Length: 242
Image (tube, rainbow, N blue to C red; front, side, top):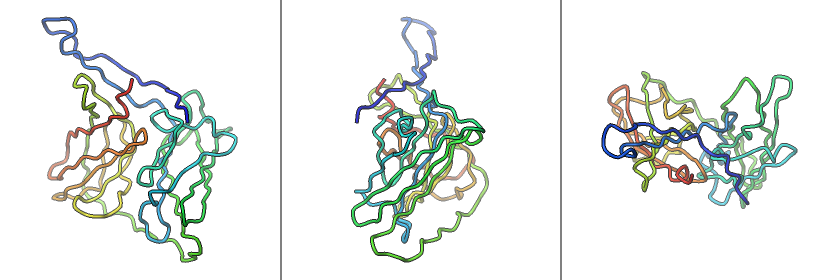
């Protein structure tokens, strides 16, 4: 499907200290373009595991034309069961006129599932869990208990373009986490605003993998938690095409 580029905000930092006028210039890419978003998390309803690799998502209904992947693409696909969608920047819901769209999840061997997602003026970020069941499986969905809480930890993520050392990305995206060295599914950690997030879901002494899904790609970085603040760098190749 043809992608429509919504663009990114780019600013120039670190102007000349000496030498050539272009020395030490930093291009900063701000991904906070789509303001009303929803993180869709598709899992096997009975096991809680991520949706199978063959699972696909389609946006249907009267407002489908106004829905984009968070990077600005119209090519919306699941990555390890996750994708973030949102409204075109020129479309704004109001208290009198919320905007509802429908997503349909299909996967070989599973019963298709549809779910309505409503964007309102009061809620800019939301998570939408969708469980799908194997054909013929009538067992009730698994109930996953909430994670334990700990002291607050602040994480400051900076996105990196591997081939562009002059580019820095400030990601405004949803982030997931799991304990490193395990086969656990990634769990929702929160929404980072321009790279910043504070959370109480990380235990001191544990090492975690942090994951973001952006532009149809998954990116991860790991960190052991033994203090209350970290600066982390994460590759974000999909944000480097501008």
